[in-house]
Amino acid sequence: MAPRTVYLRRFSSTERALHWVHASAFFVLLGTGLVLYLPRLSEVVGRRPLIKDVHFYTGVGWAVAILLIAAAGDRRGLRRTARELNLFDADDRRWLLGRRAPQGRFNAGQKLNAAITAAFAVLFFVSGLLLWYGERDTRFRMPSTILVHDGLMYASLLVVAGHLYLSLVHPSTRHALRGMTLGTVREEWARRHHAKWASAELGPASEPASADAADHR
Amino acid sequence: MSIDEPQRDDLRPYGRRTFLAIVAGGLTSLWWGKPLWDRLSPALRTAADVLPAQVRNLVPSGWRIYTVAATMPVFNRRRWRLKIDGLVEQPLTLSYDQLLALPRSEQVSDFHCVTGWSVKDVHWAGVRFADLLRAARPLAGAKALTFVSAERPYVDSLTLEEAYLRDAMLAYEMDGKPLSRPHGAPTRVVIPEMYGYKNVKWVERIVVTDRPVDGYWELRGYDRDAWLGHSNGYGA
View (cartoon, each protein chain N blue to C red):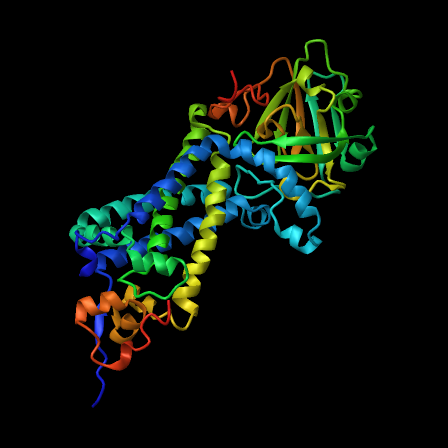
């Protein structure tokens, strides 16, 4: 029979909007932040006051946009997603220990990535605001703020590097990018990487497509 | 979906816990971050010394380049002049070579920025202010120096007492090399007891005055006397 590719909806438009607003703001903030941070770039690019403004207002705009999308979008769906990201079941714990275990819509690594990214976002925002206020009012100045902001940058670079590798480069996982752009993923891929979610959405596998379920994490 | 069934007893809220743990750690590190870093960084620097030079050069030196204008001033050795005027008997205009011909002093000192970063053991060479001003002969009413930067509109000032501290100088060399453009080529103020914003870069004019004036950052709320640990909201 002619196999017809079945697609499953993995991300709502609200979720995708949140993801891409966050991602674009991250790279604008990273680029402008590095110009402010690295002496060589500071010298080549110059225009520090302008770059500083772009960095600051991108940060503010990012936070406002995230809140607006969350408020105006599919709030129920977001709450369900947050719940899924929060809860780790026995299979997730097995997965984290490096064993093969069928995964839900998010695997345990994606759940951790979401928690880390959200926490970094809060810390970036708070430390960034403190840097901005501290320059205007010494009561908000703390000697560690800039170290915290820089440390977050290094830590998030590592996380983002891993995220980009898995979503753009690694052959087995990069189909996930389709889920974050178009919203849907192939059934066969979903059964392989997110077996429990795929069966919950489509019922148990009818073909041997799931024979190697959980073979790839 | 099975994961949504509330009666399952193998579900743990690790996502929320991870989030809260990182936020709590990060927020409290606003208090313990720098003390810890100050304790660790000597060991880290010793460890970094064994790395090959190419790798070591990739690690940021700790300096950040703060500027207030769109571009950094460009130093032209033949055309550059340092003007010394105001309350002096003999206003002076020094060329770069004339500046280098003055008595040379060297020192190793730490550099602290008011925003929280520091660079340890910077090797400076330059001219003490007493040596610099000798030929100009400050008048009896002279009390302070205003440093005008080629980076407009940056200025700042020091009292003569502060400028005559034994490790304050007008530096033209850093770590064995002529001062680079980001660090204020060809000359900058170095006063290690005070935060970096008093260490004016790209100095092209020194005005001797009867009182210190508010500099660029002082006009924006910073303290005029920027003593380390005792100004700008730090210390008592």
